[in-house]
Amino acid sequence: MKAPFRFAVAFLLAAWSGGAAPVANASQPPGRIEFVRPALTGRVVDNANLLTPEQEARLTGRLAALERRTTDQLIVVTLPSLGGLTIEAVGLDLGNGWRIGQRGKDNGVLLIVAPNERRVRIEVGYGLEAILTDARAAAIIEAIVPAFHHGRFPEGIEVGTQAIVATLVAHQGEPRRRQR
Image 1 (tube, rainbow, N blue to C red):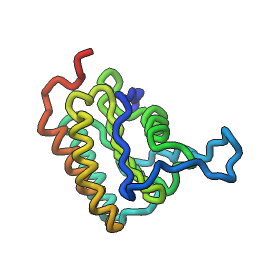
Image 2: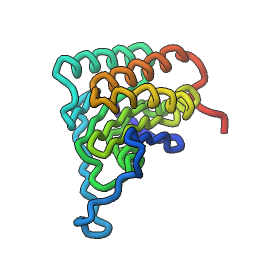
Image 3: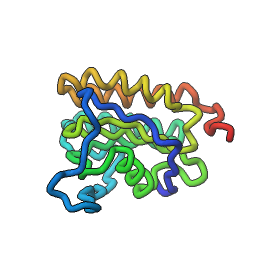
Image 4: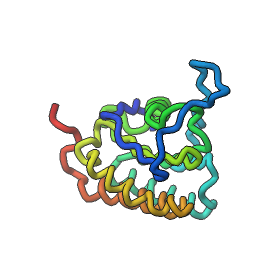
């Protein structure tokens, strides 16, 4: 995970509550950002404590196998708070700060879950935008959200991870970048 992660056009935000986008903390001074990027501790960064150690180990194994097979890097991150930022801003910060994907391939993907703000997002590196298109990512998020509606976060994360992995493996060897 050494290369900079350049993001394609910001992708999809889903609010499984059907409500409005989150707003900054009213007690927060204007311009103050409370979000602090967590450390990249592995392929699964479960800072919201949504997964058991067994679930995290299973996901980590699946993500390592994906990387061995395709060189694509998928990181699952759960956050207890977005710190008053949008999930888009947090996704860009994480992807660029953690340098997800390989240098020159830009083949990183983040699955971000912020349960307290009821947000989920798939952030896709430029190198995978022709494979993990906006439409495919939207379909994956639509498959995740029903589990989240019922508080079954591990199930939703599993569904999303499986779908992303299946998409990347199924399209292995195909051109990865959109023509500009």
